[in-house]
Length: 603
Image 1 (cartoon, rainbow, N blue to C red):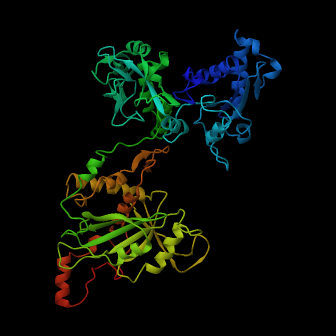
Image 2 (image 1 turned 60 degrees about the horizontal axis):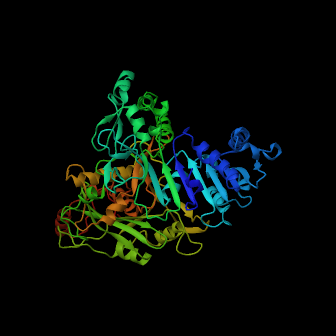
Image 3 (image 1 turned 90 degrees about the horizontal axis):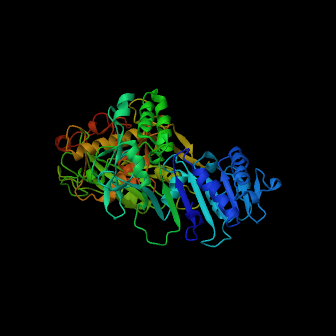
């Protein structure tokens, strides 16, 4: 509340649990302060119209009437559920997030957005985002004179309050001292729920890194009421001693704000995070928190995800993402899949090369992978290309030396992602450009090239690949001579499969179809492979989700290479191709080209 009146602060953000006093502190008290101590124009934005009316008539109006200091400002006819005007020149406009007309009214010096993660703030319209419209009300005021105040319980990791926190100049946590070792630390439920921190560590006031503590008890998810009552404790992250709820409450009283990164002294956008573990009321008792958690897993499975999100959001004040922690899902682990293979060189065991090209607006990402008949594979080439001519040169002319033959090897099969998006040229989307290129280059150049599209929904059962229906028109409606047929990929299953195979390569498990890398593969590759994380959605279904700001083109290329070699691909899989030495021996004796049984000539 003090920072909301500090001329050195332009914005104050609070991410906190439900029913903890956020609205009282940063809406009612701050609005009352500015009308009484510093008469100003204030806009209070609530999530919906009903809440706006409730706060104006049942919260702020009674506050002015009942307060000895504020009652002199109360004039009944000037206090409505839309506006409040005080005789000293103060003014409050009430608005709700879903109404652009209410938000985009007159200039305001102070704007307060309450529960900015509620649905009303994300209603789709042709206008700018609701938060942008709110902050634009203060454009006529100079830095140090206007205030933006936002508060909310979080929802998901891309929600408004989380984004506001992450774009703040400084984020503060309340660090409390351990009753035993004295190390001050932010209170957290477990290392799985520490959004915004790297490597499970926090920065202390002394600028050193420390381990987080956690809430502990005996019995886990099956704990009895007695176990919870007798063993509920908070475990210090440093000395690992156990605190009771009383010790925890006493420590909270002795805490202080500590920034997550060193202050540089000129921060104007501030953010605070607190959770219910800090509460000294009954709802913050360790025993009650644990009981609430354990009860979630007694519900029917289909209801657990919703209840779990409720606990993570409303109690822990953490965004809900349900990221599934994958074993060794790190850049170091990915690069353990490297073997002593020179780049752009085909190992002796390989019988064919597949290539997948991911189209972007201005360039193309690609990967070339060598396969053995047992589906063991090696990444031999990856990178970016600038033009369609470069793509043609790679697919139709490039030859790779082969350790098992005197003859170099060309790409056997290739595919191009035809996903949508703006193209390089006006009125030509990426999809249309890919379709037109495929019509000219799909057959007759030695390497058969297919158009692909990732499926938005996973296919039932073990199905990975589906052949789409033929079509003869571009998305714009123009006719496409000869037509086209796309291959639809179950990207969820393929990405999961690729991570399993790469994990097998990292552990050198040769009986589990390992996916190896050449020896010069770098961190640039590993970052793209790890650009997506496995989450559980609100339907309790797993899905791969791209991490904000991370490129995933090489991951898409790798699953495309793997799909091209799969038995479900039209014409059969890599397992039908004979070893190179065997093919050359037969060809030498017969004097003719050999095509493996089950694989069509054009493949």
